[in-house]
Length: 123
Image (cartoon, rainbow, N blue to C red; front, side, top):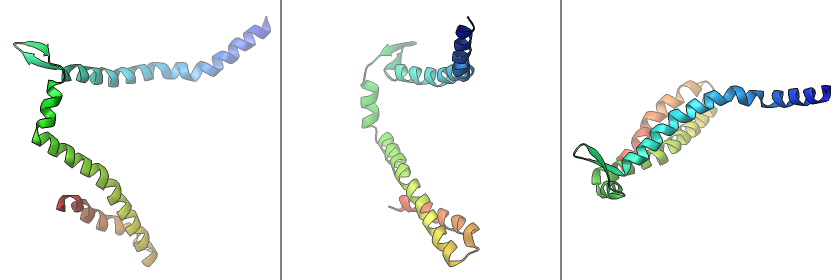
């Protein structure tokens, strides 16, 4: 009988951390999942006389024809690509600045980043 209790205790000790984490993970999952599911369902609907009417992919067709939306997507993609490049440029700049001037490690990032932020928008 003592062998069965020992196995049960060992199993409980193995799953105990997951039991403590489960309520928090469920709440976090619901907090993120509900808005995403609601967003997807609303994206296929349009308000019509106080009710939500299912319109299928019409909303998506409309936004992909909208020039303002396409420009916003282009700007976001430009930032997505240029920010890592700017960080890399700043790190390389700081590395060379640090080699040239041993005490310059605190001066290089502020001097390089504002200049590199402008680069994508000058095109």
